[in-house]
Image 1 (cartoon, rainbow, N blue to C red):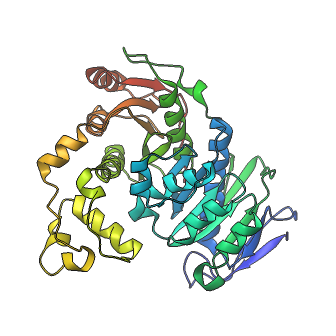
Image 2 (image 1 turned 120 degrees about the vertical axis):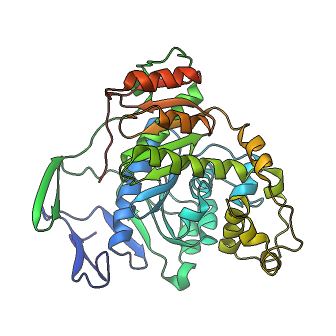
Length: 392
């Protein structure tokens, strides 16, 4: 390890010189094992590492995250995948370790957003996880270590230039952190807010029956939001985030954005989508784009004459609006977390359309009574955590 690392450039090519370094003269907690990570790569790497480390501590399960532009496109813990989940995450029939399951879930939640991601792994990267990364368009990975086989697999990506970062899992940052904006230095204490199921004890709705799975998934949303650009809202189910709405000025826009992604995750499990007749050897990004168009608002973009032959062997039947509505009505027991209070019940109204039953938010709005009333209308369970989780 070294005290500093020179980078090719900063956020943009005109921002030179660029480096990361330790102000106190100590060694950097990261080692570059391959490639040349850039400024944004390291922002993604260090944020995503904190997320997966905390997910592992909170759940006891291996965790993974798929980051893009300093926010997670997906985050998950290592629960086994069902046959349908294997199909929508395109894992094939290869053996999957718990860590590989975590990355498959994190990458697969929102494949459009995860294109060109930076991956984070809570545990030593094994060959099974490396094989998943090998076939995806990804800009790098951070983990506390790599097996020899995994490292050899990853070094074949990007013509041998795939950025691979190893982080010291025992590294503890200083309590105070600093940031410069326009030549002005900001200082604050680190956000050491501890998140686990104890944050969910203050249930304020009439329905107070919260399952253990719901507690786990709500904790996943809250830890994910802790490292998501605010405002932010996240939906989760089955040990993984299924939709993130990040960096919006209006909270209901976060809720709509994340809800739309959760809906897409569920629609991808529809029989018509699972049986789309893709041409042989279709590129993974082309397949993902075709699915997104097929289940989106404008399926004609992929089904019009002259276009469908590029991706399908035969022209598939359209997934109709009615079929979508019928399928979406079956989505249930979804969890939603918010990094700050919901100011109006409209957020809950939108969440209900995506099968939300469990809610976690800080509380503290002058309209909390309206939000609680709306939850009660749908027999939801809502906990006030008392913790705001803004991240900028």
